Amino acid sequence: ADFLDHNLAKIDKFVELTERQIELLKEQKEVLINDAVTKGIDKNVEYKDSGIDWIGEIPEHWEVTRLKYISQILNGGTPSSSVPEFWNGDISWVTPKDLSKVTKYVYASDRKITKEGYKNCSTSLIPENNIIMATRAPIGNIRINKIETTINQGCKGILVDKNLIDLNYLYFLLNNYLKELQLLGNGATFVELSTNNLSQFKINIPPIVEQQQIVSYIDEETNKIDRTIELYKNQIELIKEYRTSLIASAVTGKIDVRDF
Image (cartoon, rainbow, N blue to C red; front, side, top):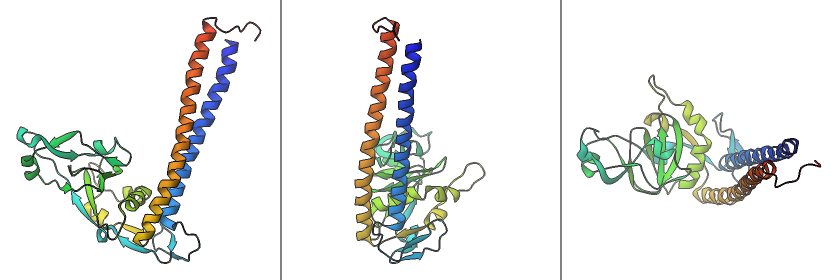
């Protein structure tokens, strides 16, 4: 017991410190993305007041615009559940539940609808490589759809004007401003982000070429951080396996602890 108490305490401390390192790396990743999408990657530029409190200063040559000017917001809907002919077809139908299962890209939906179901409800068809956002219960989970899909009323599709804004830049930007988007939600039964509030939401955008440079920078730097996080996670798994084997070896007499 004394041998295990001593050694397991050291192992548990190692796990605790390593998990803390992972959390610090995640925070570093958030700061890196925030800095890149709000200040850019060229630090030798003049700055100006964006006019928006939670954005602050932005590079002088950047613009502030509303989401509706660089995209089209589409609503979702649900076919009647009492009509079997509307369901189990070949048209993807994404819900907030689908968005909660993935981190960046949506490749599939749990449920599908038929052409009849699509025609008989208010859902919208979202072409691939746009953005789908959960706008109720809860507001959040912003994803890029890699499939053509319809959506239910708990989601909104953001069809991006790719001549004005880079898809991945907008993805990083909206995720960075998620708290501000959540504050725009309202409703008595459940909090929901309306189409009007979403379309009126102000964002900062640099020229399209600079957006693409920022995305490349974010991808490169966050990939480094993600690889380090993965290494730390592997270390934790290995030390936990060692912890289990150490206990087993000690209690079955495979380690001589009489002189401990």
